[in-house]
Length: 527
Image (cartoon, rainbow, N blue to C red):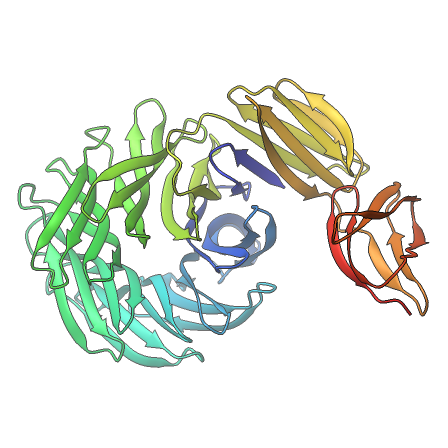
């Protein structure tokens, strides 16, 4: 288990498969408690005695504190399998799209998962004569819309958009080719009665792909399409993502290329007809030979939030998170370097006052699957972090604390009791226990990390005919206090290890039980 906590981030979740690159490509917040992310991970497989390393799907569920709830994989057999888009249907089911290898050709895979445990409930494989990728999925009630690239004989890649019902039966299927080379859609989103798709198409000029946007009715009828290319630089442009405001204006995030081939971060606001560009914003690349891109954008409270990656000579590729007003005024919220190597931000989601960012961060050897959140109104650079790595070493847990930047002190609590005060990092602890809490003190502020549960064991209630027991099934004493709703303490005691202890409360009602670090609200019914 590895957890990073940043002062300007509430959490950073990192998954390192240990072999090669691990990447979060998309993510979504359910609006209540949980965050889901899809991507791919490098894993070693033995196929008929042949050991090989391939990419597999990885799908992760975490809570809003960054604690992992489950993680599932999909291996389609020999070859690479990668997950890209993710969405939640109204029935609470999770939909993930990507591709799987099938006898050397890649085919679309659309899969439905149970959010409670990560079990795959249904899946659909769709393929053509070449390598086909499903890149994005968007839900409307219990139907879904999927876009991706699709091969047709003699045509290269085509735009393809599908609408599917809850049983994954295809309701309509739109395939479009511009008549030249490759045409690829990257993002689809549903707004009311309309389905928007963005990507790029081959304009027919050498090395001159242009942004492409198509708009459909939900019944599949094409409403309009638009394209945009940088007239001053006849080179490749692409719309990686889009969003739409309340008046129908369309905002596109992607890149435009210089004549050298280097791509630049590009944001464009179109009117609803795509005939008029209201404004466009370009960020010059940090290197004449390094490409930069805006990967995804969302609209929230009349602001546009964008993520992607930029290049700096000192730290190579870094995450960038920017905020734009609807009139185009911009400010940089974050430029994040994790380890002095390449880091890429790929997707955004949001809650009431936070944005969640999905991508990958470098561990100096390869890429790690990374999710983080950030409050919307904070500005500045990441200057400080503490990283906790917890490993089960048999009779004890090995806890390694690492960090960057200055702090005053760190206090470690184990099972509700003060354990250690730390003044420098890195620091290593060997501990036995059940629950770890860490507090970082810096310039009068306190930052809590945890709790991290080292074991699934926890105290439980036992109700007999006449008494309420609290069973301490741990091998350490447990201190508890019971308060009524007015805050008055009505009981305080210590329960010995592996012991049930009766809670003889004076009357019925609602009480708050506080253990070493847990707070539990419960009803007491007097028999």
